[in-house]
Length: 67
Image 1: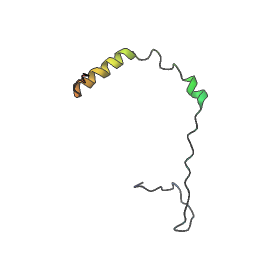
Image 2: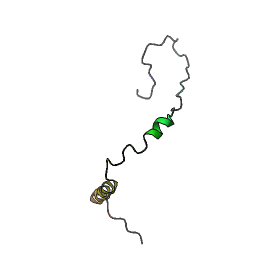
Image 3: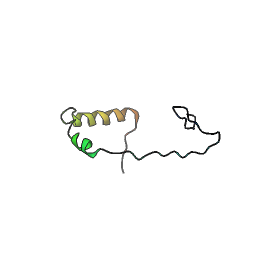
Image 4: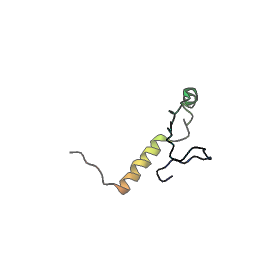
C-alpha cells in the first residue's frame, strides 16, 4: 500500500527491524495446463473474431500504408 508492504496480521518485531521478503517463483502445473489444450475449440469463430478486431481498429486508427 502506497509503496509499502504491510502484513495482514500483527507481527511481533522491534521497530526498525530489517526483514527480507521472498516472493517465490510461480509454480506451474504443466499437467493441468496441457489438459486444457483444445478446451476452447469450437467455442469461438476465430476468423470472425479477427475480422471484427481489424474492423474495430479502423474506426480509431488511420490505415497504415507501406510504400
